[in-house]
Length: 139
Image (cartoon, one colour):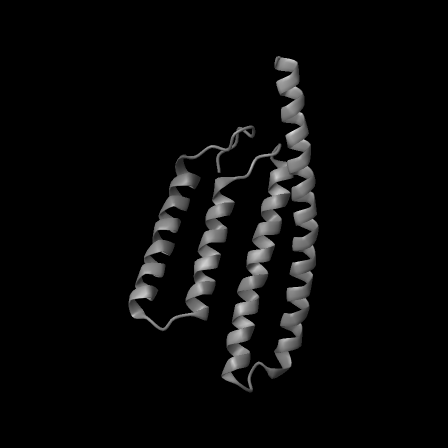
C-alpha cells in the first residue's frame, strides 16, 4: 500500500512541477512583454497625467510578474518548497499597486496601508523567528 501511495505522490509532484514550469514560461513572457510596454511609454511619460499613471501601473505589474517568477525559481531551488516570505512580498506589492491605481477613498487608503503594515510586521516575524524547511539556514 505504501508503494502505491508513494507512486501517487510522485505522479502529483511531477504534475505540479510541470505546471509550475509552464507557469514560469508564461511569466517570463509576461515580464518581457511588460518591460517592452514600459519602454514604449517612456517617450510620452512627461506629457500627460494618464501616461504617468499608466507607467506606474505597468512598473508595479512588472514587479508582480517578476516576484511570481522568482517564487517559481525559489520553488525549484528549495527542493519543491515555497518560501512564505515571497508570498508576503507579492502581497505588499499587490496592495501598493492597488493604492496607486485606485485611491479615491481615504478610508480605503487607510485600510490598505494598515494591511501593508500587518504584512511588514509578519515579514519581520518570519525573517526573525522562521526557519525554512530543508535548508537549515535562517531567513
